[in-house]
Length: 402
Image (cartoon, rainbow, N blue to C red; front, side):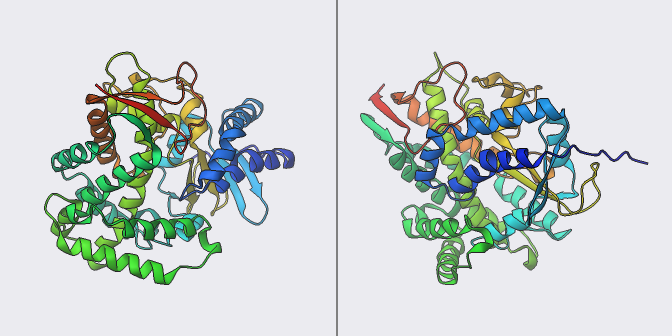
């Protein structure tokens, strides 16, 4: 008979502290689409740093195991803080990634997406399709990255809006083909739906925008342009209930988040003496400044902990990614298979990011193309213990031709 572990419950005062330091800043900044003004306020307030210090203090006071938090009107939240518990949650299929809040949010633009699929069997079939398409070979994408990187400035100032626009052209070409390169309307429609998704199910579906987005996306997918993920999707065999085309909005959404990771990684690479391992640098960027601040799972069956069904496990990435590896730049964590705990930059377990290798390939290729012909100097100094937050909206680079 397996042992069920009882968890320490935090006090009412600690619950309020967690709400103020962890939950509210994350919600304010936008869980699906970042709000620049809120990110700036969080940066000024050192919000991530405060949250990390609070969790470290609670771990010291309550012990290594997860903490149990009662949230009025929302049920129980479990906070895993130690590496072993984070791994255990992410490996346990009785903790589904398709939480109620996530389904309410992502349903605004990807109602058939893998990430919010709860049904047994269907989730596995959708995962198999994602794995098949997203791991189909990256060679055709190197040309896309090189061509778009060449449009970035070789002199003057590289800003986030300029980098972001270039990255979106790369994403549209990789996912949908060269014919989608300049379709900024598609991106704006997705951005509008993502802004609504920040409110989860508190805001109704913007049906007109969603339908227009879906029609526009379908037109690109119908071309199945050679050398794109759309072509691989057209070749894949999947049952009708898998909704292959319904997986694509998440690829666009997740790929866009990788833009911030690549931009911060450029700052890390520029701060190094000599050549950098760019894939490891991107992984360090995501470890130190996670794309997904809070990884959430929902208990749908018996677990190894004494928690009721429906309990939300919330893994606060800025804390767990630094608690054991530390705050400094450590690319060696990712070399030669690693071997040392390095957090969960792309989640982990059965619901880990299916596109991790594609994102890392694209981001590393982009950094290589930028750095090969330019010397870049970031607007911030990154040495020693790195800040808990690096605001990509305000980060820029002085650029000179190499």
